[in-house]
Image (cartoon, rainbow, N blue to C red; front, side):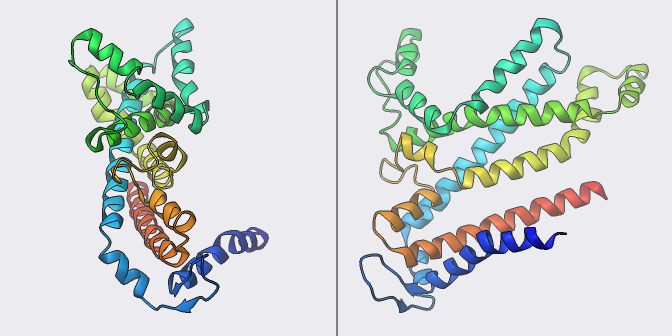
Length: 279
């Protein structure tokens, strides 16, 4: 029964992966009809490529900060709204709406909000007296990454809120009632009872968001196109520029293979954590 699904996966996933590995071992350019075998030359080149290492660092920062911030904020909101009843449930529904907004719309929305001058963010900060001049959010290497992370957290926060809300509904009522009988305080209830039940949900949610953020192309591209000066260039942005701007498919495929290996390592670590939790 699983054979048809395995054949489809082998066709649409396995074949492109194998083809990418083969291409990564050659000098493959769309500008040249001759494709020569290069061995490990492309992999040797990326070791000495400062843009690759900058993109790898940016990917780690973008993914790590986005996932941690989204997870923590989603957890806090889920705990705060756990017992929301009546009209207060509308707040939870309202907080889930950013997940339904297309990513490209979110990118342009935050681009307009953080633009200099005229953006509402600078206007609000100036009016509050927190800054004395408009900040170059999208044109400063130090601030551009902060801007795209804020936009990304806004898009994925509803996902963590939904995951933790569902996980909180799975906490056994008898455990909660027993803790209340023992006069457990609010913090003891959260850290001693609820958080252990939320660990598996947090692991699954974090894994899915790590994979999504590693592959997040439209948000960064629409807001900064990887700039300024590669300050927001992640692996997916750099691979796209190499393949479809410089037409260096061989070198882009080599980076793509490294990118795939990193994701497989991260996924395997999370799977081991999940198995240990079940044990």
